[in-house]
Length: 172
Image (tube, rainbow, N blue to C red; front, side, top):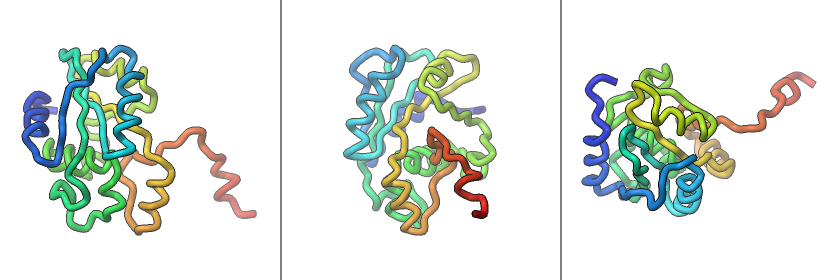
């Protein structure tokens, strides 16, 4: 993405009152240590890790702004605001980086990897400017968003194993 500066994004997040940024204690390695840490943090507050190519240390980002934060659109329901992926997509990609919702839907400047080894491999791939590791969205949060009338953010509803849609959707 032309004009994107990962170091500047990290500096912005570090100075923003709604975010707590710190270095991951261990090495990136295969990423499992980072995901273990995110799993614990994610029970308290939306959290994810940023890996910048050329930087050997992952940055752990915790969203501490709560549902009243101005990183969200006014119409975003509280149940959506509680999602890691909403903080990333709406608060960071849209507001701070400039990749709006339409560009996210079109996957402009974004690639999504479903498996951890693939994401770690991207960290050293040519042309990659930032890798984000996230917790999977718990089914309970998906349920809360659905019941609120809100919509899940782009690419946040990948589940495995997949149900056989023909059995679920097909007329009986």
